[in-house]
Length: 317
Image (tube, rainbow, N blue to C red; front, top):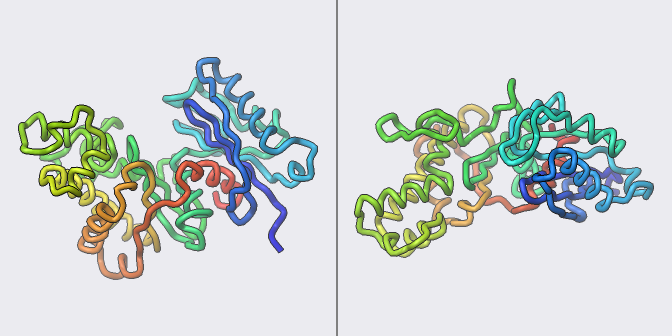
């Protein structure tokens, strides 16, 4: 018989707040969504979270009694143990004690964590990593986010920087450009959608012979499509993005030795064309004992990863 314990996850985004109800096995029962209304300030955003949670599970119902806690995934700089948002680039929060305020509003235990960490935890607990105790997740979108799960637990580290995979310095100095974080040669500069688009635009500006010069608004998808169609310039860009992803995984493999790497986010939709190249580099650059039996797979939960992972904070963080 399955446990009656229930957990609520909140994915707090700049435009929308998504809430979801999960059971103790990581299965998503249902979700609810509403606007964030960031322009109205922090108080309105927190009131909205409480309202959407209560719409998802009405207080006073047997289901509400079974809710063990509410986890919230947030993009920004957080004091995770204290439950405080120090600063968030997309939200009107500065040193806001979210945990305390939400516990007062909902009367349930609250945990907060970084959005990339909770997305990784969602995949590890209820998605592509289900049943695997040690896995590392990469989210390849505008930037490169990540999360590390060892022994079924999310690793946060001393200052919450564990799993910031996009900020591993992997590009040699001569080829390195500055990342948004201020460092040179971060993985994010070459393997994110932004990095792939930048390399494509650079190639067009240099006058390289490529079908991408006919594309008015180059997005990562156009680069992958061109590469798949045999465009040599696009293929070189994809290979570069794949090389540094594989190289970073080879480094991670000898530090935490995961059984599975999970790739999510928009860039991962390039599928096997990208994954095969990453696997080849990973195998080549890591010792056999660190890559034998290790698989590199696509994420499964899509936009639900954040709510599932936030709900899982009470069991796995």
